[in-house]
Length: 375
Image (cartoon, rainbow, N blue to C red; front, side, top):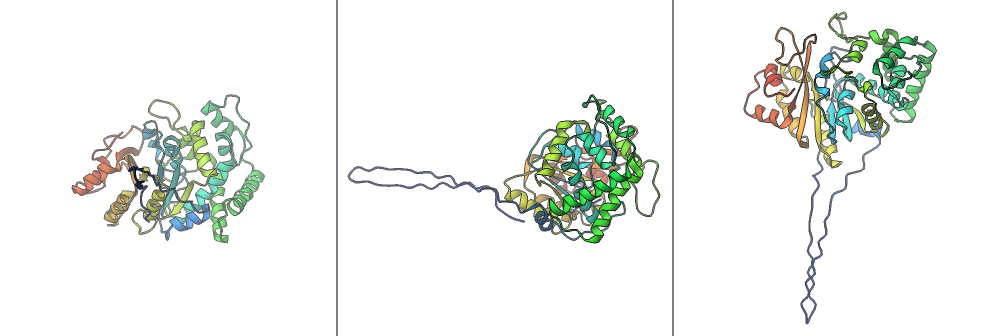
């Protein structure tokens, strides 16, 4: 999957000024509190460049997630503010919508993921409601259902509208125009072709679009977009961020305000995570959540886990800052596994993770995923 600075924290100084006025001694203490103001962030396109590092290869296209068990943690998340860090495509929006951060950084080793999020940014900006977003994503001319809070009716209205090739072409033109003239990101011809490929994949495969790996055919257990859309929470209700208008509005608000930032980088790289740490501290914010998916599995396999841990230590974080972590059951089901799901999603306090690491408790990814986790 993926991955991939230092302004000091807010400081307070007090200056006492003592004046003596004869013949009566008059002592005046003038206390002045000096607070550092958050630095002014650079424009969106510059921030992407400043935070990013050189990309790398991963063997999936990650157009959609393969984590059907995202519903396992969504209902437990509460508004935390601060800064969110995540990885991969749209699944981040489930967590961002619930956590309500002030900033969100999507860090992925794949350069295409950054292009994918530019596309999603354009769709969010042009879509006031969840149904507008879905219809834009799949290029369908949808009729708004009479009951807009009925998520099943919303999905049904999308499914009832046929894909429209003319709309697809018009939408693609609008997406590229948004990236060029609103986000002011300079795209190469290859970048434009990649955005077109991503958007065309949604159009060609529609709700049957499936997670897939390069060099291997689609696997039956890999979910489709439709499966992810219909996943139910543990309480039995819809789990998708599009089913919650307030959550959708928060995600869209971050996109419109230039605070939903795609970053090319490696979790164990020397640039992206540490630059984000500097930036977050410069904004007088703290990291409150870090969605790592199952990236740590690959970091352990590649022998760079200690570097990743050092990068995590560099993050300014809240006392309650948490990881959201994915585990995949290939022969050894997670203790928290849900029936019918290959993936298991759990949470863990970042501070507790660092304590366990310092105690040399992590022999392998099983330990990382199962020691002192929270449902």
